[in-house]
Image (cartoon, rainbow, N blue to C red; front, side):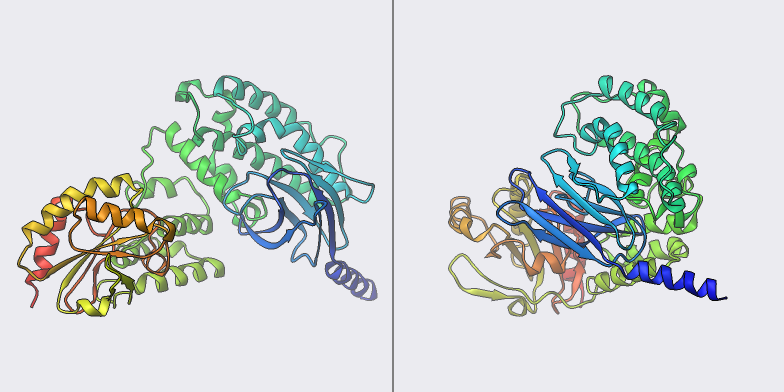
Length: 455
């Protein structure tokens, strides 16, 4: 019993010992270094350091877990410019981050991070051409042979590299599989001058099966970028099976069928619903696929998604905007009570927005004399206000022309990430549709007629 207690005390003491990171950033046009933890197979930023004049930076943190972390000048949205390290309580890391590489400094670095550096030496050509594709011009003719060569060498990479840390040695074996799969699948979906046909894929691709990676969520979640990599594997396998990959609900059953683990299925359900703008569509989707939302983290994400969409469902109050018109007069949503309101969110630099202008003018003419009020809200930035005014006047744009001075509260409230975007509100200022058809589509006119006919 005493031995057990001492062992537990030793583990607790180690967990409370901070990790110390020190280094120098020698990278042009970058002045921040970021530290990420891995949560459910995705990176989450936990610290950021603005480097000193000489490029120096340092972090001290108590690790939440023993395992992989990321450090670099990239973001949580993609692997570019981030490097993988392994930390446990008491570890030290000394390094220099260069333009397209990193160097370990001194003698204090752990055995685990020395092995990770050796692995990076081997796979750096793939990293440069896949995740950091801007560094090296490449097409599949040169990438595929390199992938085959490195995949073959990876089979013996760990020979003679046992670190004495059994947990790391197990994770590293898995990490090699995940890294190679990530490089291979990401390469296929990045812009290239030429793209291979399925029959031109190199032999390594035939060994990649989503089911071989998605058996246990607990194992997948320990790897960096595992959710992203699974997405790439799914697309690859669907293409190999001649199954069309479609966004939205269509074809989603085929996608989920490739994932054997229900918790991991839940991650992809949440990926799908993250971009939903229609509450009813969201509820319908969750009625079918909500059974895969199993973990506490997934349930929290679902609650957040639902709460966000609840305020956007039909019948919910409109956002109380207040913007100046072309003459400087402030117009609010409350001013429009008693009118059916069609809002066009646009900008002068947006080609598709300008393509809709003739259709919008025609629609206004067709509804002349009715209770329809068309409002065009520009999200041009403040410095472009004169450019906006000139276009409004030169093209004799109709309706109410309002200026929002950039992507602000309105776009955040309605989850607007691309334009043009059209929204409809009833005479009581309640939401009808916050992702309405464009004026170039007959469906918009039909929908407006129905709303105007309401008592």
